[in-house]
Length: 141
Image 1 (cartoon, rainbow, N blue to C red):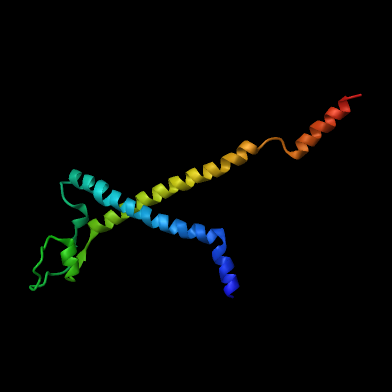
Image 2: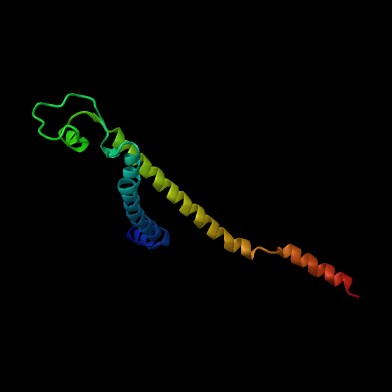
């Protein structure tokens, strides 16, 4: 079983997958920054200058013992207050859509690049070539 495991790990596909996971995690961090630091602040300034990720609706009462900022989603959530964080959800949703779109573009580009060498190598088939040779030989006396 150990030999099978070594053979499995040594396969290129497993190593490619490991590299893809690491690059994907780093790429997700970049997209999260793009969403949180650029897209959502721009969207927030258009919608009134608020931090969009901090938009929420209270679902319960704030306890008397709460000493934080009652307008802070993070503080209310940390204190266990029932809040509906629709702004944070929308931020994460936009983050996902950006990431999915960029991955779509990458896969589309990679597919196109993988297809090009095959198309460039495409020419007459062996049957077509043999037919041409046969016809040329028939024409000669």
